[in-house]
Image 1 (cartoon, one colour):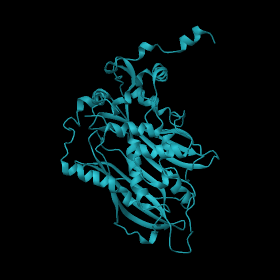
Image 2 (cartoon, one colour):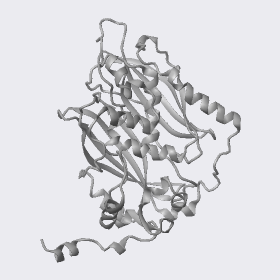
Image 3 (tube, one colour):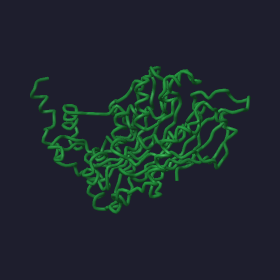
Image 4 (tube, helix red, strand yellow):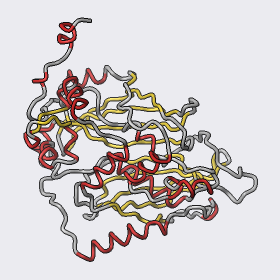
Length: 408
């Protein structure tokens, strides 16, 4: 192929504007997105594929998880598994399921939640791959931006032996930037000013969290009671260290020519930011630049949804202990978590039952901010060992036909 042909195929660099694109949600754009239903998507990165002691620990650093089963090689070697394990949400290091990266060019996207089924533990030496496909497009009206589009993708994650590790349904929302700015749903929200007493309470909860990690002390199914509350964990006040640390934990980072090549290929998702002297930035930089966040109607920089989903998972794994197996976890992003907010992850047992000869527990999850607003409802199912000798002494990686109630 000659140079002239290459130049004819490549978009002009000038297509990258000086501010985020103002794409519109039109009937034609929605129809084009719906036409993609059933199509397989290219891997987003991929980013981290290889599970090693370092990548598993770094993922935990990025989500603030202190459980030694997922980060301490020595502890893992002495555990029932004979190895450190990957945090159940580690597959998201490969790619953020639900990230809005297809259809509706120039229309802003937000991660809106995941519903995960988990089948096998990840251990050092495993290599993760995924098959992702588009499964749905839905239109709705919202107070935030008026007309919006929900996009659904499904992904199956496999290890190097082609064994199914996890399966997830990801949801993303698309909003017109101008419509969200004009609606101003969150314009009255300002960064919270904490008293010394509030900060001391948050610090105490964070520093005391390791005391509530169940660890090697087996939690038996028979011990659990409906209505039992899980020890709350705190994440905050959210800072730039938290959001940047999550990117590092995911192995994400693009610079210079890598960014520019992507921008030339997908100009609607990048812009030349005057605050960076015209340097090219991705529209998702609103997680780190307040000016860009306000372009899409968010009052300040905000967290990453997959990070918050992982916090909800940590709440459960802290409680269930090493012998428990997280079988399913679902979370929905209902409100923004802006810099300065504190997230309190809470859980309550709402059901216990036996299915496929396995003791199961359903847990209602909530993430609540310092204003008392529920930002993230969710639900989880945990399989716990039983004292009944007629049931298996261990919980394997097989599938269980779970019947979770709808998230409220």
